[in-house]
Image (cartoon, rainbow, N blue to C red; front, side, top):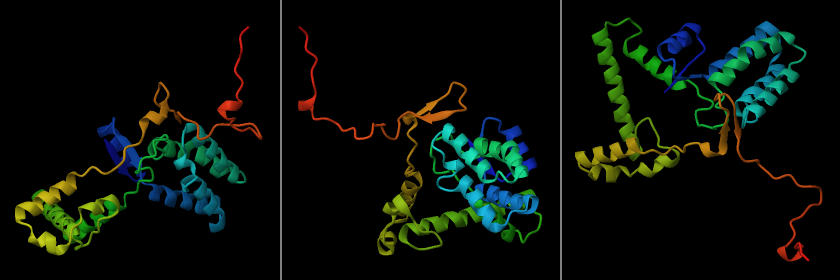
Length: 250
């Protein structure tokens, strides 16, 4: 089970207490904002100085996108080198920020699609619920009814995406489920529902190749099992088989 949130202490403590075996993710958008605020208000870095530090952490070649734990540590050292003039930040990064990245953002080389997870969707649905309740507290039955209505509306809009209408658009491999509006309307109610269920059950996400990862016995460290390239000496070439010498026995 994976549970994501921002870094609010009461919330993360509640998740750890109630779901101790869950893989808890932290929202990278909130982490970026928190880091930027810290660099600005606590360290006094300018915007131009903050940008490369944040890029070294969250960029494509940053800490969170390291191939293995060795690369993770090496890139963390690069971050500290880039901010070596600010010992306050270096201490903060090592003691507080780095553990959050390793335990709740970095996926230890598995390269999952949720590596840079954000809770934008959660924030969006939260705003919808607030609008539905007119920003006022609700009793439990009323709240459940309103949440149910929001979910029903969501699924109706999702179904409309199958024929290119509504607020959603099918993207990537999910486009194979899309049909023309005319074809969709020509289907019976049962046929439309069958198409929708097929769409919902479609498992299109690629799983990480776990066979290419070596995991330590304690489960904390992982490295790629296969090197990216084979080292060669300068000028070394692969000789044709006919040029290779065979050892002769006398």
